[in-house]
Structures are given as C-alpha cells and as structure tokens.
Image 1 (spheres, helix red, strand yellow):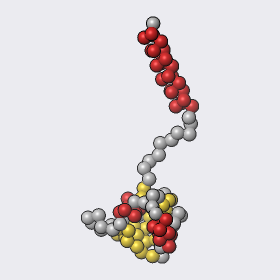
Image 2 (cartoon, rainbow, N blue to C red):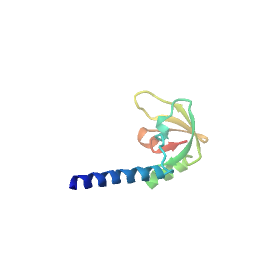
Image 3 (tube, one colour):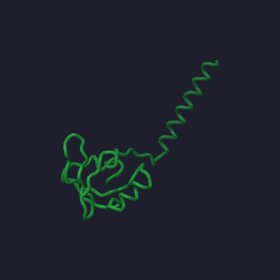
Image 4 (cartoon, helix red, strand yellow):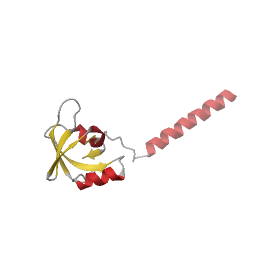
Length: 106
C-alpha cells in the first residue's frame, strides 16, 4: 500500500510540474548574444548593451563613442587573435577580445 501511495504522489508531482510548464507563455528560448568580437571584416552592427565591466571602462567606452544605439563597423580582423579594428562614429579604434566581448550587438 505504501508503494502505491508513493507512485501516486510521484505522478501527481510530475503532472503538476507539466501543468506549470505549459501554463507559462512567457518562457522563450533566445539565441546567444553577438558581441563586437564576433564581428567579421566589413560587418555592420548597432550596440545593444555594455555588460560586466567596471564603471571606468564603461565611461571610457562612452567617451570614444561606444554607447547603446551607436553604429559599429569592423574594419579589420587581424590573424592570431590580435585586437580587431572598429570604426565607431567618426573614430577608428582597436579593441582586444576581453573588452570587445563585453559589447553586445543587435
């Protein structure tokens, strides 16, 4: 008799979880975000967010024109993981992977 009760409780728990999952319409799967480092030569994009960086880095990026909504062009993609060259607004800047990975694009 105890075994039957455990099986019933287990089935009820699984049924409740399935019902909860089905009742959430706001759950969506999203693709990984693209960063400036993911850009290839000649590719255009727009800055969507600056993530996981200190306030000092964020301020400096804004000073050179990297802010949400700013247009970005990858000018050069050197070999061997060397810093990439980007045109941002009216300037041309070189960013290494650590910093370019923190700039999310649309």
